[in-house]
Image (tube, rainbow, N blue to C red; front, side, top):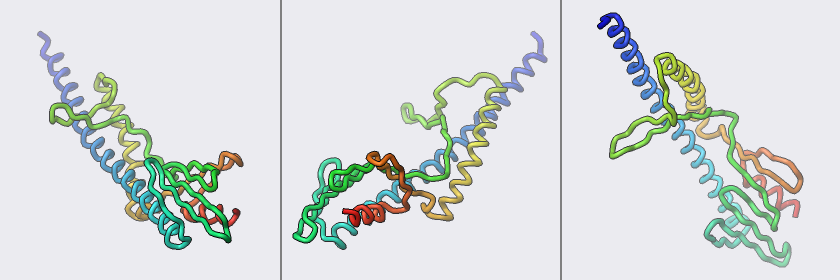
Length: 195
């Protein structure tokens, strides 16, 4: 048996194991930042829904009816007639005219192909495909380090701006346009003024 070959294999294996440990630590850190990002997004959406509800019911006197997949707001009086607004998690319908919307940001969290899977109470990282060889493990780590930089910048902005990095994109299919807005309430106000 060639002892040098055995030593080389042990060194290579140690390097791969070391790489795996660093990848594990980095991926867990990135998944934590990603979760904070999505939590911040959810908070913005929840706040916006609350603002819409307050604006329509308290300020304008709409009657609210919570349906299975959306909230139905109705107003009926002699001056303006009947007005109906539907609010769902991805669309608004004002007097029958539908607007799709989504929350967006100029920050890009890059696609992270790693996920934490749980088998029989044991957590492990899953890549979706096998990585073989020391060179490929090192290449994967380098790619993750690039992603980490983007994630850390986003995390810093999230902490600094407290969710102000988001805006709504509202799609008006009828007029083939997309509108950027910090607030859906402002958009609803504009649409109501045009009625």
